[in-house]
Image 1 (cartoon, rainbow, N blue to C red):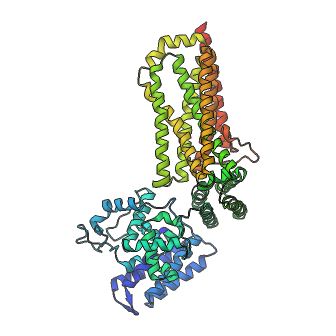
Image 2 (image 1 turned 135 degrees about the horizontal axis):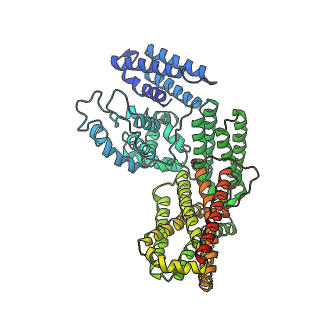
Length: 611
């Protein structure tokens, strides 16, 4: 599919090198056009049948005939583009990056990988270009660049060009390939035109530009709509500032989700279940996830409905349900998106809602981290090992600083994709849960005073002298950073949508509550007899382990790493990590069973030791 699309793009761009005024001006190039059009037609003929197969075949045949008749280059470009667009419509391939490409990163990659052949300015005159046949492409040739979309450049970078020195860079991360395509696509459009393009965009008279339009529309097609000078200025600006192509209004993300779900349905009807699943997952991660925190703050029940409905679509694809049945689910989602757009279109969130959202988010996320950190500090004090406390304090302070860096990056430097967020939360929760299971069972086993005294006398002193401080630091860092990471993403979503003073007040109030809770826990834990302290602490950590494993499974499901079996009318209590999926409930029950077994065995061991 991608190769056929690339052949059509190549024809649209290079045919003008072969024919001029109805005469062949380059026989080799013309023969190549005949070969490529025949190859594309044969590939289209071999695709699985869909409702658009006959039209695709007919257009491919007309393109061959037009090339054979030496039609005008503009007419061939129009036919090839139309055929490529129809091909993607009936056999979708993902066209969008998950976030605006990074122009600066593209410049770095170009200097490392491309300048030796294409030259430092992209003119095809690099030191390694001598003797290459065919010679490297001149990226500063505006006539050729006008016919090239960012997506077309991405395809060449991704797959390479057979018969040339252009190799595939599929080994690069996908975001790097998009960055390189963006940089290369800007070389033909001088930077001095960019300021005019910025003013045109900010004026709003030329229409909206989103990522879909940014990567798929050629400068030539844009020029037909807004004029040559305007198009050149817009392209010069956008390809240097791709973030300007991502509308900031929340509704734009839902439009992305709608578009990806339509592509998913097209792929599903075309028999490509894998592409359908990937597109449906992208609709959630790249379309709905960016607005989920804000929607959750304004209308939590609606957010839950949409999240569940999108999970059902992915589950339906995996279960190979009928296309009509799946379409009903997608249509229902469209209605929910409309409701969400109405909620998100409110310019401001009320002061009370902003306060409540900030207070609830920080209190909920901070409480989990606080309980674990306080338990560790109390344990070290009970053991008389206060010299280990600096490791704990370094762990949580480092996590807070890392959170600050994350906030700076997420605000000014990079966009944290939905997948990155879910994976960070998922694997962080999973690792913390595993450690807490072990620590909870261990602490329960020491809840017998005799067992604790024996452990302190025989083992603890030795154990804590062997680099276990690094372990403490790592555990505390993971636990705290996971909560800080999620808190930052939620606060970023509500910060500009309501009363900033209310958001600050809610956060400060929650922080004060957490301080009071922490102080009370430390004071109470000092008065507890050692056996009761360990018994209560082991129960607390065990509950947190069950909560975190539920959150880990949910996050990994949302990132597409685990399957989803939805439980209709199932219980959803996010505070306790309970979500209505079979996998999440099974994981929590499994961890609870492991903890129960561990408690029983530790009791027996303690009983034998006491006997």
